[in-house]
Image (cartoon, rainbow, N blue to C red):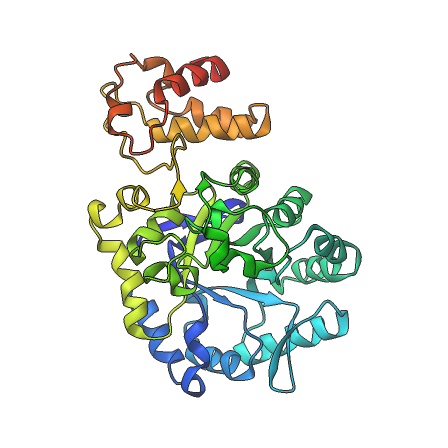
Length: 381
């Protein structure tokens, strides 16, 4: 298992994490086998959004004796009412839900307390002004949560939250289909088939700006819906072409600020399919060729950080230079952290001899030589 640092939290997390989709099946009977398999394969990050007593209790039992082996991302603002999950912003209910969470998990703290499901800028204002954020900060001050997170499908809402400075971790839906659609307050639009019937060109600029802002501010991203609820892996894929788990995971892990992909698994077989990414070949991980076959999606001219440009004849890490260039473009200035990371590169854009070998290999027709010239102008080397 490879591990990454989760932004400014400093937490060392497995790049494959575990979602809780399978925990509520068969009255929680699958929880222990899934946790055991995850543990045996080096997975140390778990997301728990469910308020179901069965899910919470079964996970608590599965974690007995190994709580410290896992980093828990668990959601505030979720409660169980009349046999159903419910999202809430009412403080008494939020407090009740968190108390129940700690009790059923047999723990006295959560590593990342995730403010649940904020899909509009106005909803973020409610969080800031309605007491939920104040409560989360109180829990953090008391050590009951180590870091504050937020889950969202809307890049505009997430941008507001990330720029507030309060959010340490962002849980966001990242895959090569959702990344093309504009921001919206109804997350169901992301998987509505008719939204993919027209030609879509390149990543939505609000999503790209969000990822780059998270990278700049040190907000770690944990990925949900990397497989689009499983649709991207079948002929139901909105891309029109089925992808593999390894391709979806590679795409998500290639976005700025992403630390872990939360693989939702209903069975041990599904979890093993995600874990196979760790031993997959570069060819098996390669999503670039598949993207070129998408019937109505056009990535022409957009760097996907896929690595096909390598190797550079002068040893430049072209993808890294392009990533730092995009960060600078997105901000309109060069943040000091970006400048420092760029300065640490062994070879810079100034070493480019404009041979064009990288452009010939790029599947998306990116004007790499032109990017190198712009990088020299911005960074001075």
